Image 1 (cartoon, rainbow, N blue to C red):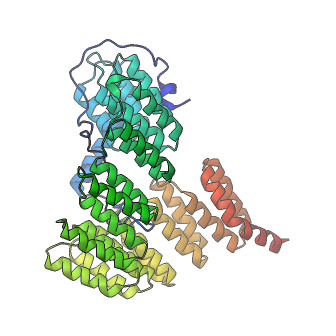
Image 2 (cartoon, rainbow, N blue to C red; image 1 turned 120 degrees about the vertical axis):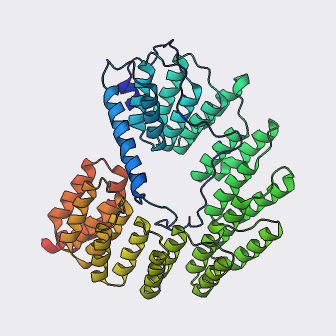
Length: 495
């Protein structure tokens, strides 16, 4: 039973009350499906394109803290039965922020409080935004229950809310249910699936690598007279590219150009050169870089980030400098993403001197390092055996305003685990809890390996028990596979 159903036993109770308010914002414009983000660095892990949990300037941090306090205050009222005439602005803003932050449990509690207000009037847009959020949070069952609540509120479903439900099931890997929703839509005259619905369905199939389903969706669209949009083609091209299905990617690009109704755009440009670059096909990447410019498409900062990353992966460091010089001549300022890619590239190559050079340049330009930057530095120093420099980075982080995340702790824990310093490693693990960073499969695997390598079988077993207690089942499967040989060797040694 999900949180929604536990918290809201009167799911089918119809409320006939008035209101003239709805949460801020609106559903994306039709045809404006959110496409995969291109930050020019989407091919390695950890992803330098991510800004991680970088702390914002003081004013922004203050706003975040105020927002969290507002959400908590409203959520506490949601647990009481007497608050049914609250100030609309406070409730609506708290709900809006909870949705933006993907705090789905808080959002559902606040939404139930909203439904209790005397001034409440159901709005389909509110339900759509909630269903979208639940999809992002991989909570399809909650999304389905919310859909039922919407019907009980006397609202008629729209294409948008149905499409959000398709996305919720698809993103959670429940493609059968996603397809069944589309079938259900076809039976409702005013909710027949459109190009946005099918683009969403394709995107789900691609993310799950179910490419064999794409042609069937195309055929159905053609039968219904629905033309593919630029977004549809971009979704397919990007998916094929990331899966290294380059021939299929080129065929999709050809279809796009020949369609006459969809024209390649900057997203197409970056997807194509990114696919070839990540596959090490530098000549083809450069060929398409020139081709797209002949089509009138000019590169942006994301394009240059892709080039830098691709050249770095291919070990063509001279070309990285050439790209940076070209950017300078064209007045493109390197972003935090650009610097993170360069730092990671030279760090992985073992060239810590050049890595440090760009780290200094970054700070000189006034660009604040984030958790991704520090993760790359720690990883590079650890592999190079510079333990003292790892200590130095951790001191810098401690004295900075960067909010750390799980990948950073994994890097640091791995660094100390590699040197056998289990005391510092264990302290970092405890610090994760203090900073509200949840350990993942990598955290557990790293620590168990380190403990076993030091012959600390009981500590390793305790970590396994902790992992099971946190119900990290996926992590458990990975960890067992990784540490079993070490555990067996250690047990044999002790016997």
